[in-house]
Image (cartoon, helix red, strand yellow):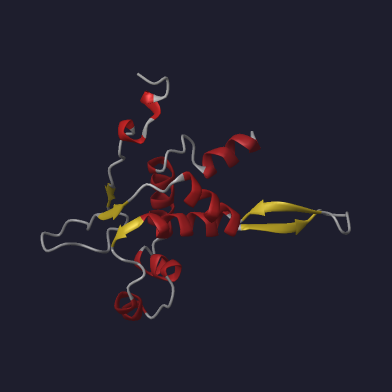
Length: 143
């Protein structure tokens, strides 16, 4: 037996998709909130999302000195969009029905209650394996 046999891909556990009803405003024929299906993102996908949502900001009082800053709202929105399996946020007919042109705008249109949207983002972070949400980390840093 190879010393790496436990690390072979055949031994890697598949992560199941998760289900969550992000809004009370979309209901099925029985009156229950519609559950959406979400998939886990890979570390590589997450890094690409994070990089795409990182901007350079000038350090106050220091001309020509910049530091990276993560646009957390944009990052969380894109994370939810990338992980959503159903509904298909990239479907043109669904986007047209809400009068939007991007998956990110469609997500905001579908989950238009700010409290529900915040709960969805917190659920998504935990589903993706982050032990603390970004909001938890901000609160911890303040104290």
